Amino acid sequence: MAKTRGTGLLMLWCDVDAGHEEQFNRWYDEEHVHRLLKVPGFLSAGRYAAIKGGPKYLAMYELEDHNVLRTAAFLDELRYRPSPWRARASGGHVGRNYLLQAYRQIFPARATPIEATMPMPPYLQMGRIDIPAAMEEEFNAWYNTVYVPGYLQVPGVLGARRFVVVDGQPKYLTVYDFARADVPESEAWHRARESNPWTARVRPHLIFDAGSPGVYRRIWPEPV
Image (cartoon, rainbow, N blue to C red; front, side, top):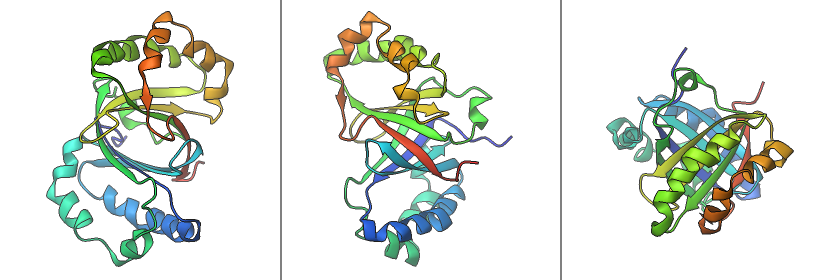
């Protein structure tokens, strides 16, 4: 099976003016995603719409690693030579809550052979998080050894990964893959959330970005 995941992500969140949503979505689904997927090192992609949190639209690109975004194939052909349709569809209409970030995976260190060929999940939950420097080492130890492993036992959770931003803020991103939208409303999820006393110590120090954590439904490719 073709590889679908590496150790990098390119994420674009944005809100779109209501009068331009149809054109924006057609351009993204019919042209833009396909152009990016032709760039060497772009492994797979999915587009999502927020069920909870925001911004409303998310485009998620799985990369071999974050250095793909420094290659001539990406910079010259796509960022510096936009198509006429891109200029019409994106110009001036995605300026609200626009967030474009590249990420490097930090947990787990790399995908397993099975995870490396997984398709884009039907639902995601993601949190964009900062943490005070004095708590950072403890925060990462807690997240990797207590918090994520607890959630991986919850029915409907397909996987979880953690990333650090390449340049910008917030520094950390957590991505949970869900089989269903209601996973974070389940009793099992809430039990996992409160299951370890270490969580009560770390949680008050977490600084979440606006609209985060958010739950997203995949809109491209359309779920089967």
